[in-house]
Length: 356
Ligand code: NAD
Ligand code: TYD
Image (cartoon, rainbow, N blue to C red; front, side, top):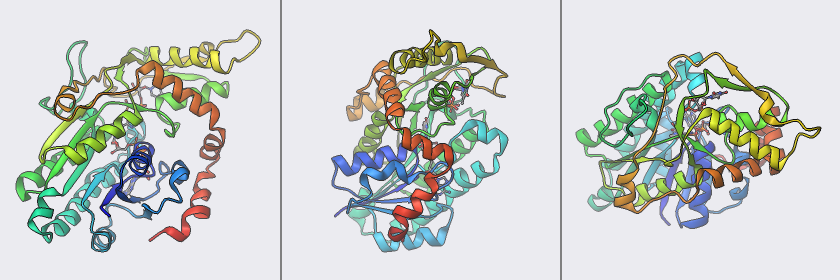
């Protein structure tokens, strides 16, 4: 059986990828995650019993732990998603971002290189180290233009600059040591199981609780939204079929201002869970002080991955947002456990005996 390491597989995108791989491929997945506040094994409840899924609680910056895992499981590749991922947190405390996103990626690359160097020639060329990154490394767009694989790096936040540093390390390991890497840079994701610090789940849960919906600045910053399962499909394709040394930009072709996103969410909630007494969720919108260094606009040209690997998103923004709102309404237990912190207990009760 072929084995694949996924780092950060208890996070939002990593858990979507693990669920996809277990449902639609024959990979055996070793899921390596430190379980920070963002790691939630309850998001993997559906695959907890799978024989092809092994969860290991470990830090990618722990070289001894990584070496031991490579020696024990001998994977054919790695998809590296583990990271600190929230821009606002990076502004409040950049240290963890430097540690996990830069140092962690460096340590993992060195552990991978040591293991990969010892493989037979044909195994070495088939191996892939796939680094999952963001379009935020490219900085901020004006009203026109799109990011693509040739856009110069210009990161502005501690988060995006730490991801940019990691991207540079990964490409350096390709050019210097010949490690067969793939890098993907994706736009903003949304969908089920996203931690409610990010725009879309935060707005849904605040609205349901009757709390203010905090819109930074004037709400006219633009993001290009992609449904998380579409990203997971793109990651699988890039990992399995991507050229060594290649970069693929991934995006939803769904640019919206933040205000448009919040208005659409409010309209969906008015339809699916009316507040009653003639009140509308839109009344909760509140304009608050802008995020420092707030990037104006992100938008992706995904032509390369479409042409080379045949990828295209399956969800439109409208269909994906409706599914997402419905998911948060139907999964009140997942939400309640995240809000109370109980999801951390769930890990101990359900996974302790399976930890390596
Ligand atoms: P997330 O914050 O939901 O999950 C990150 C996961 O990494 C968590 O499970 C956490 O426990 C784990 N982790 C953190 N530090 C670790 C460490 N030192 N060792 C092992 N595990 C660790 O993030 P996400 O939104 O799922 O993003 C996943 C990846 O995709 C990140 O690399 C992010 O930069 C990238 N990305 C995210 C988006 C987005 O919109 N969310 C868009 C493009 C790219
Ligand atoms: P976020 O989900 O944090 O993603 P990123 O900063 O990585 O793009 O934010 C998406 C957009 O929404 C961004 O322009 C900031 C804005 N935003 C708000 O207006 N209010 C909020 O409470 C949050 C979390 C984000």
